[in-house]
Length: 252
Image 1: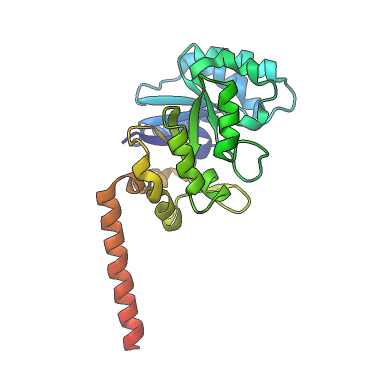
Image 2: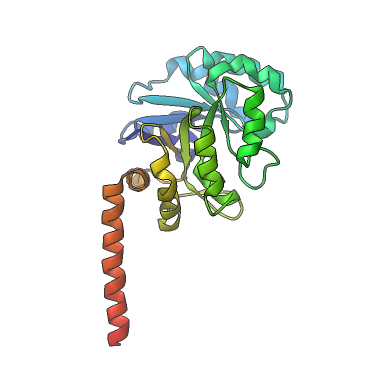
């Protein structure tokens, strides 16, 4: 499968360190993160010097907020990224003059948002955005989608509506403060429900904040979601353990 990490999850604010750490992992996907405005120029200026040959898929996450600079400034900077034919993940709440973003063409990739954001949380929100950005792609953040609608019904609607735009998945858990966390059994069970409707060749970017020694474990947990055989083995194992524990309690 195509699974890897956001550099910001491995080493916040230090993409070079994150790349070096991931070089010794099985990750074949990487998202170069400039989530904070002050990280953007350094990352863009370093693109020519980064050794990314290990990765079959590379994307770029634009800043999630702008404080010092304008929307026009950001779009101009991102032109250097699309010249490398790299998908650029953008939060829709930073988009003000939507037509200006058309210059990023098919490399603009809109991400669905969590409960804190005023736009981009539902399939209807996204449909309104895509109607003005006909070439734009879609990044499905499963954790955001589950937080907004725990039934995962809205997630399925997004998948079905924007199947032809879907170019990558963001994967992690999120807590009640909308902070990304590593995958756990509950999130795996929820995400597995919608996994049959997702093309398993689509790159998966883990946003789980994990230490270096837990990178492979997180990749394996992600594989469980999209691999029925491994998922069923896990569930069988859990059922055996629960049955054993029930027996112990009964005997006690």
